[in-house]
Length: 167
Image 1 (cartoon, helix red, strand yellow):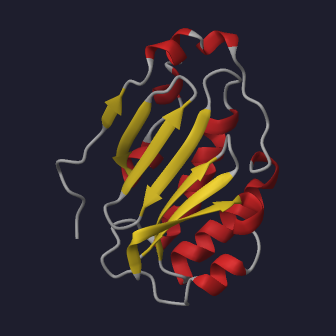
Image 2 (cartoon, rainbow, N blue to C red; image 1 turned 180 degrees about the horizontal axis):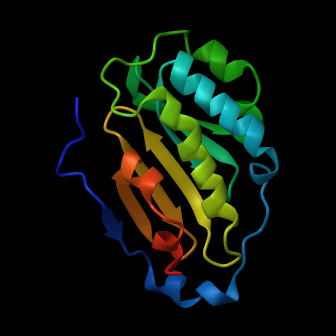
């Protein structure tokens, strides 16, 4: 199955007041920032083995929002501490990787690692949240300037860092 061709690179500008104050702010290290490796391992496990098809990581507020393939109309919001306990895996039954996934299981970790890069590449323009949807193949990004982007995972992984920071 291929990605929906109507879902190509999209950018949405956010609140002008936030963009106007961009250079008066800087990234503050969060609990999730301190636990990237554990968080990424858990998200990868939940997506590959426990039916989570969409995960949004809110780095600034150290929480995750998860959608399950078996219950797509109800999302779960977990703090990083809740995410890293065994509870999410117990609440999400073991299952096979979705057959209709556009994103290959091997692409999950590289997407998450790129989130880390975008989070720490600049002190003022940084990733606040990132999401990955295995079924429609989209990555969502929300930056400190309140800009939001949506693009196919393969395009996201192929993008040079300069695309995000205008370098």
